[in-house]
Image (cartoon, rainbow, N blue to C red; front, side):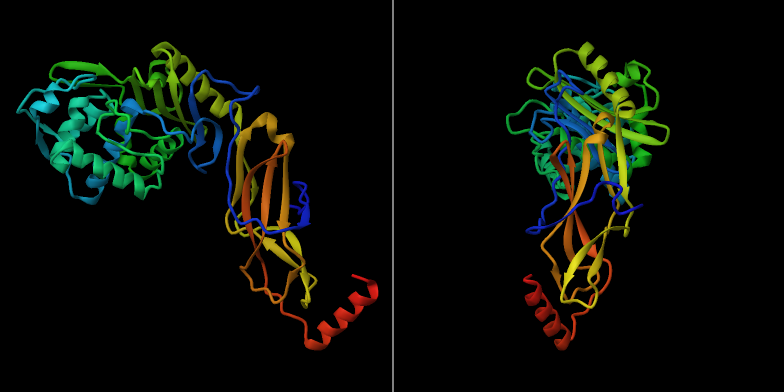
Length: 382
């Protein structure tokens, strides 16, 4: 890749050290009636679009993705088995809302309970798992919050295993997308349950409420719907097409029908209208920085990781990349020193800042060389 292919410009200004990644918000090129929305590329983790996605919201039954994640984690560690059985408490039996139709004192396997949580959205199944694993639902909620902290879900605070309305029970769409991605990547053998279109228990068969399944959307394989009067209608969904996976989180829609149509439209757009652009490879030469009093006049700048950014395809012509550093950079310079930043703009708005590093050592000039250089600079009036 040529150094100037993305319009790289070198500025001698104060070094920028923070990393910022903000995707486009609700605009003329893409609109949704949903109050909250995020579209994520699962492979890279790049955010393709967001609207109020960093604001904590009531997740309703989308909470159950975390409930299942805690169970998956114990299964993966060997602390729990799919064949382990838990007893249905009266609290679980009496819980309202979506139900697996469990009966009091019944023994139910973890395998069946997980299907009840994921496919049927059973509040009773959630509570049985919570009580069986942690002793009480309150104690299990603490485990959910510990898991959230480990995953860096800063907005997440869970008060129960079901998503039952509570003013302190919140998570952002952004963190739900991260949680969904974690589930897909970390627990592939258990994630398959999300792809089951129905489940039968106690002679009652219930369909998976996933609106992408109901619409026959190609490649859809998860995750979870949610609805309460407070949250309105929401959905965390994922699908794979042509080897690419997208994750969407939408919430605050007015009806089940709107959730279905909007989820299908957004997921279709996630594949058709948005794209992740790969700008630089790992350790690729991204530009050069001027060196002060060094044996070399410049030092190459390299990326430590791949540089990529997601956006609506119509915005690609408005992307510009600049390299910013405080310079000339004084020698000596050690290979790997962070000496510059690549700032990616879309339509003159800063979207991401990526650190750049020295690609080679640059030794300082000798004392005689430094004196001669200083003399030349004085003569030139530099």
